Length: 267
Image (cartoon, rainbow, N blue to C red; front, side):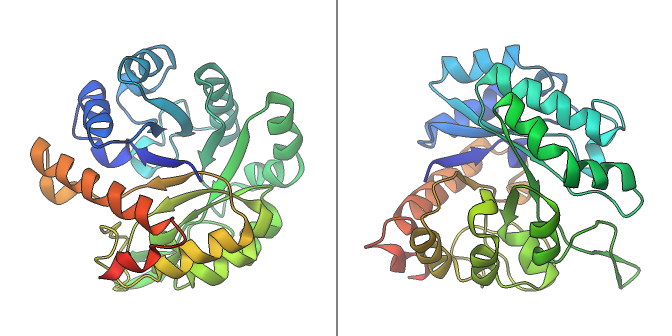
C-alpha cells in the first residue's frame, strides 16, 4: 500500500512550503488538493515543485469542496474531465471526486453510465468519496446522494473511503471496507472522536478501530494508496507544530500497516 500525504490540511501554507513540510516529514508521495490557490489548479507548477522535493503526485483531489465550488467552473462533469487531464499530465493514478448533490441528476447519471469507460479510456482511476449528512440548526440534513456505503458502491465504479466521514455518518469503517471490496481505490485516513464532528484527528487519538481496519485491508489484498489526512487547523501556520504532527502520524501509519506491529496505534 502506497502511503500518501494530502496537501489539503496544509492550505494555510504556500504550496512550496507545504511540500517542503511533507518531504521533511518523510513522505515520498502526495495527494494534491486543488484549492482556490491558482498554484494548485494547473499541473506545471505543482509538478515542478514536487519533483524538486523528491515527491511524486500520486493522486489529485478535484475542487468539490464547498469553498472551491467555483474553481474550474460549476459543472461537476467538466471538473472531472479537467481533473483527469491534470492527472494524466502529472502522472497521478487517481482522481478523487465527490458524489452528486441531490439536485445534480445529470452528474449522477453520468457517474453511473459514463464514468467508467471515460476513466478507462484515459488511464486514470476516478473514485467517488464517502460523504456524510450536514448539521443545520441542530438537524441532520442530507445534501449528497449515496451517503450509505452500499448505495455508493452500487452507483460508482470506484470509491474513496474517508474514515472520518464514515464515522460522522455513523458507519463502521471495517464493515465498509469489506463491503467496498475491489471497488475501493483510495483511502483518506484519520481518526475520529465519535462526536458527530468531522475532526480528522491524529491517528490513535480518537475512537476508530484503525488497527482492525489495517488488518482488514491486508486480508482483502488492498493495494491502493492510503492517504494521511489529519487536521492541522488548531496549529494555524505554525511550521514546527505542523511538521511534528506529520512526522508523528506518518510513523504511526507506516507502523500500523505492517502486519506484525499494528497493535502500536493505541498504545
